[in-house]
Length: 80
Image (cartoon, rainbow, N blue to C red; front, side):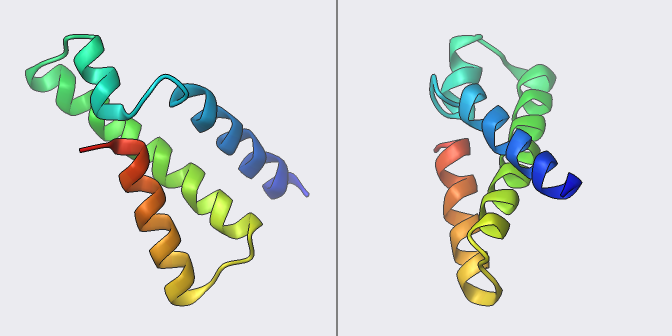
């Protein structure tokens, strides 16, 4: 039960954090460059991956379906 609560919290946190845009767009809005941008993007990508993994678990995805879902989810959250 605790894991479900943590997963839900992560999903809600990512949704709120990325409601304004992708990691790339948020970094540009904050005018980050160099090490600050690298650090921000790394944390943003880790947060996205955790949230996407939780979303995949809540959808009971496994194997190739989970990998495909998670990859697309993280790519959408991070942006290009």
